[in-house]
Length: 250
Image 1 (cartoon, helix red, strand yellow):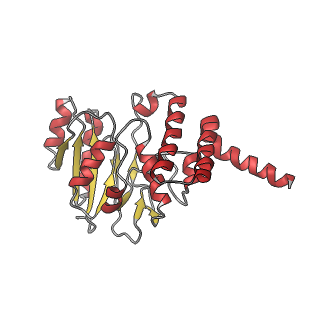
Image 2: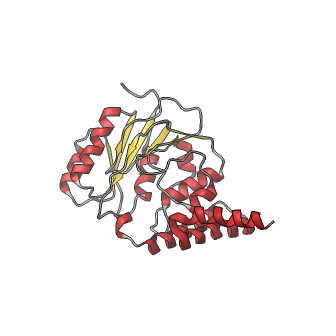
Image 3: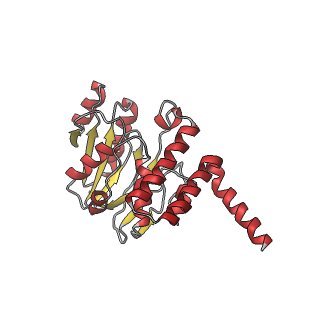
């Protein structure tokens, strides 16, 4: 049954392993969204390209191989005809979409990532995570806040930080609706923790620039990013511990 909401699902891809790509497309056919847009970042794998072309979905190709998903996502959003946009990875499986929207945004509920319930800017900076996949938002929101097209920042984290800063109303899908595929040779798993944390600091700095955050507030947010740099996934616990010790002294 066709989803009543006009949701355009944008799927950027580049040489995705064919087994995963087929599962992604099969999953989309099961939920039958209003529109699916496959955006090829100049793949060289003919089998993957043919799978996209024969899927029955809209196919677009970037003018050059960009190396990350920002440009493909923006192309997909620009060409979407739906009222809402949902962006997913080409090696993951989308299980369901919201059938109605009473907020500007509906975050997905992925299977291996802590969901976005009560998420704040501070929490996302201290503990960055991939909560952008399966997110559904009005098309004009994606157009107002296009994805970063360079590899110096995490485009998905930057996008969510901007959404939170602009105080869009949001909910979270009530049940798991997104299956992440963990691949050993993925960019996330092949990069060092140092590389990830430095990139995250640049993401927060870019956010402060784009959103014209005040000097004092920028300093506060960048300090949180440096806590993540020093303590990684334990940064949030460290800050809570530090604050509790400060309260005891008072």
